[in-house]
Length: 219
Length: 113
Image (tube, rainbow over all chains, first blue to last red; front, side, top):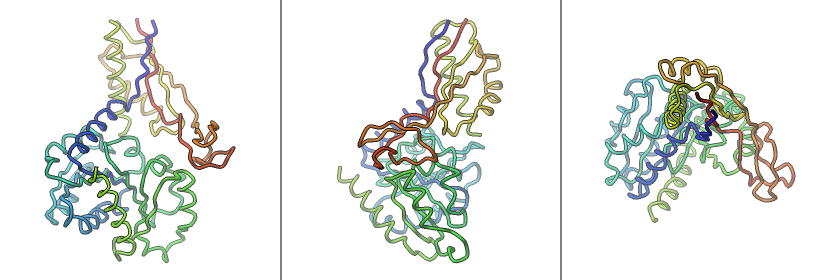
């Protein structure tokens, strides 16, 4: 006997992601999901965001890593609460883990939650967390050809931060080519060129982010 | 390791529907896997064997129907096969296009005894 099922395998995750979103919306909390390959600068970008907005907004960080708590310790040094999720070998965060973390953080005291996903350009793109903004980081040393290799991540992101632009003179990185490729895959993406080390371009990105957060908090 | 949690969800869905229909065994699982899904067939088969062990889905045949990446233009309504992830409409050149298939991974049906 054949039984019709018609159930998406990511449906369960998406139901919990929608629940997270409802919880955040109810409390007017803005959540962003930061994704990149390992070493592209996720933690540095988060530290720059915290420096830019944590005086105005009450922030918390959810750190996803396969093992260890190096990143959450770096965040905790700034005085911002950080929860470390160890995925124990799994290559991405899922909505359920974020749900548990949000409950531990007590969202009613918060304005902004920053999620640092596991360093990986593949799987995190498939798992919605309930975020308002998907931010991906590509660092210059990874090369401008990465969108061809990891199209889903580039086509799913709302924001592309090209980090470590101070390194461009040392490489053959072609910014125009990168922008052309990404825009063809994802016409609505916004691209910012930044260097967390020299702070070049960071101000523009933070100003944009403050606007988006303020818009959500108005609602 | 991506496929491990994916296969756990997949087996969960299969067993839920099998039990609902009082199945004694699941013979075949028909899956739809989009061309650009990050899920890969081989690791799914590998983890399925491990995760289904001892359940009524153990030994079931996995059939994958692959679906192409298709876009739809929000301006002129054209449906087109997306090549190289280029989301520009080939008919009217609009960039207001969305993906309508090719990313999915779902359990379409199961064959049970």
